[in-house]
Image 1 (cartoon, rainbow, N blue to C red):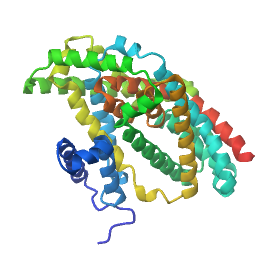
Image 2: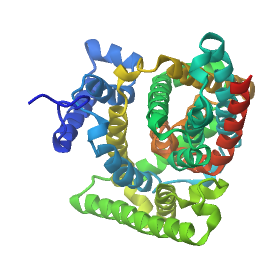
Image 3: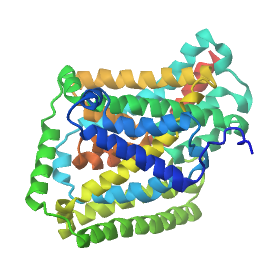
Image 4: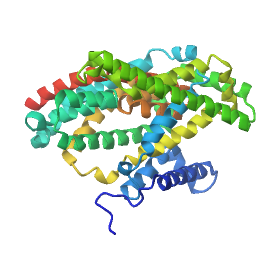
Length: 424
């Protein structure tokens, strides 16, 4: 029997997960080789980028598809919060505060880049293709782009709020989701590509990385001091701590979001600035992070010596692979006009970040994580931060949470500017 249109060859999630595990294993094995072709290859393309691209290539070839899989949901709801707990067990809050204001400046620069990037992209694309940015009433393209602004400044909850506020035609909304996924994921791939060239980029930016290096050294020294050969007992306790916290985060997150939605009109109203507080995912991320931070004040902190952050790293790489599944490279040309708007938009965001990083001599780490805290949100900001060093994961999480807070207001401002730009 023929496969339905757009139906991937493999739809069984158990088989898909096996393919993702095979891809991850292949990448980690080849990246550990010291001679031959692979050391040269990985000196150009970071391993984490390959963990993202291989599943993307499988999806593009029609082998697997995120549309028929629940693996991203599993990884983002179960493994992401567990990773946040395990990777913040040894957090040093004082050292993170010593990182200074540059992280916040770069995050806000990223938000501002999205806010002004939308209307500028509309103006530029309208010169060559005015029909691409047109539309009347609820078919108006700027209304659909407002949902992307919500996603790129905050996250899913803010995106839903923009859809509710501006009532974009639901039949055309899928096209906007496509731009969001394609452009955001390609930008994430570019950022990950830069991770392998961090020292060179920091040198060009004339960045002061001393606070970041101090934090890395501090965490490394603590880890070396408590490092031991892990036992089955250690693994079971670490998994107990992680997934108990995940369960509690989901339970309390659902309760808190439900309570706020039922009792506060400002939260239940999708048009409200505070609507992000009604998102269970938002509370899950916040509570899981708080659980990890709370454990860092107890003896549980010593489980870092048994490899807590390494287990968290395993979960993060599985999440990266499932994010890669979302990227079907074949869809890039489905709507070239709208995709062009997306690329112009993200380019303005990127150029502004580079300009400000150069002016204030901010490290590439702050540029990368500040951008992903906006465009990628809580699912990918920790991924990028952890790629620099596990001790920096919490910086990505904290900035991503801030994205939820400013997302709706920022997206509203962007939407109104895009409406003006569309009418010019």
